[in-house]
Image (cartoon, rainbow over all chains, first blue to last red; front, side, top):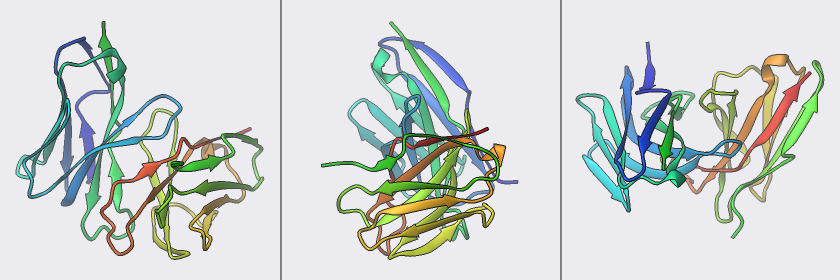
Length: 114
Length: 115
């Protein structure tokens, strides 16, 4: 069956450390992958997009990798801050998706402790 | 520049009733998608509108219907409400045209509670 798994429901790290979140998928062939941030009671906010032929993308303190052989994406936040605390969602854009173009994982709730 | 706006922010209905939710896309965007997000779950794709037509639809029953207007705003209608329809309903817009692989800009949703 098709599924997207994000490494854990919750991740706690100390301020200043690097947070690494994992997104694994099975039985999908995504054309690209996106990462979103969602705060409680708010809509998701787009962070980064990486295409299947790209290995790595960076934006300020954020870095995303995409390994289509391992069927895995890693999302890194360096020098983490308490303001980075939120739920982070990965989403796959599916090629020839039929009826559902964008499929989300359940998210990882990140808490950065001062 | 206003982002995606949704109304109302909160709504309480009873089983069997009908509801209409509204969305104005970000300026310059022509495509609107609707998602349902149950508490503690991921957003689930309902459908997408482009050029006033439903372009794609997820696995939702016909009780869920929508509309897009010439100004690109959109409505989501749900008939015969069930308790399980309680969720945060998110609208997302993008400037896709024929290109479907653009990032989504989300509104903050309408929290629908069914009693």
